[in-house]
Length: 73
View 1: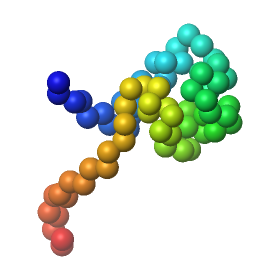
View 2: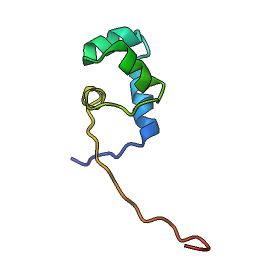
View 3: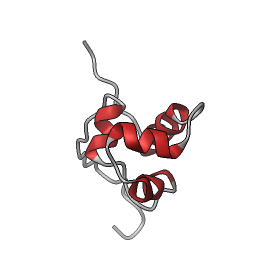
């Protein structure tokens, strides 16, 4: 089974889709986060927590890529 790599924007889109027909409070309660902390994630003030990623069926991996050479690099 191949694994899809999601961008941060895609993760937030998945989270917003999960909110489509419910309140932030109800989803925060289901995930097990405080409502204020969850609101900070929704507003992108904090990155998605491990609980949010687990709810979305994701896990976090850090990836480093070569940057492109620019004039003075």
